[in-house]
Image (cartoon, rainbow, N blue to C red; front, side):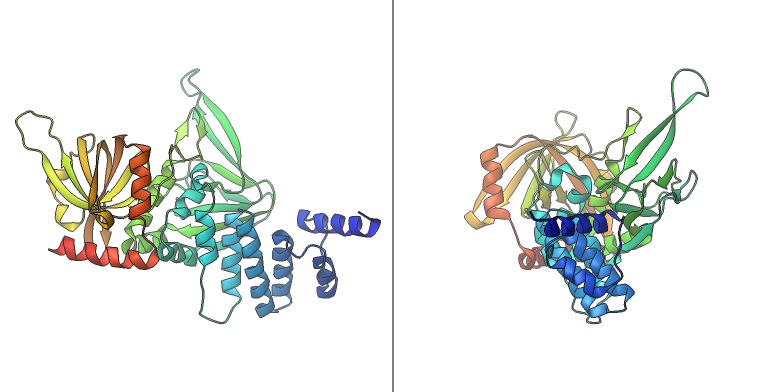
Length: 389
């Protein structure tokens, strides 16, 4: 590397690091010639174009940054730039296909936020991204204090937030221990679930550095969930990952295997606790499935009080594989039950934890039960005709 190239590299690093800024379009274009595929630099250049009111050029540059962030697996930055692109284009022709595809190409089960977005259908993902709002926070700014209402989820895109909570130390009555940890890229904050509960913050959250984040309000999420009940299920799981454990919060999914959107008909046989009592037989559709368990939609006609005690019951599931006129049996336990509304109709979702499902059977399901976006519309039409009958 000669001295001129090394100087350009140093300039690029300084611009990205924030210690240097350029106000000249021509100077920035010159720098981009040697780093045209650096998404962080493209994003900063797009920000400059917005300041210069060159909105069409800015939208194109944000779009290019999105593609490179997706290729690098930096999905929240890709989402952030996609929203910035949308805000600078006059056309109503908006899409996020590259982000949707990119989320399926990464190991999303290790990061709670990625897992949240990756398990959405394209329509669900578009609806959520469309309601996300970009937020810029300056270093030292107070973001949240105790007793503030929990009305939003914040997804951290870049920078560092500090979260401080006070927990009972166990050393004596009235004794508390101060616990502080940093929240960085791909972390999130906001305890908004269940939606119907009014919760207050128990933490002090402030910006250690300049921070970029994406926020979505509880009211906007509720509106989305009325149309897409699966988003409520995903929100419930996301918020559950912020459970307190040993004085610290866990941001990793506790899932042991990746879930797939494999949608097919199932028949459930729920075994009673008392001998001599008949088993309860229900029909439904899988929402998603993993080697460890499945989310199953039962539908409106099962909205009855008789199902309130199903959690903890043993169940046998017959999973239909219509493409090959076959079925697979699996034993499990009902781990949770959730009642949601969809376009004015009530639906029951249950989570089943498998006691055993062989890898061969799971691969068989993945091969024959996966559906794409177009096929999902057909599945949901079939589902609606069944639950109304």
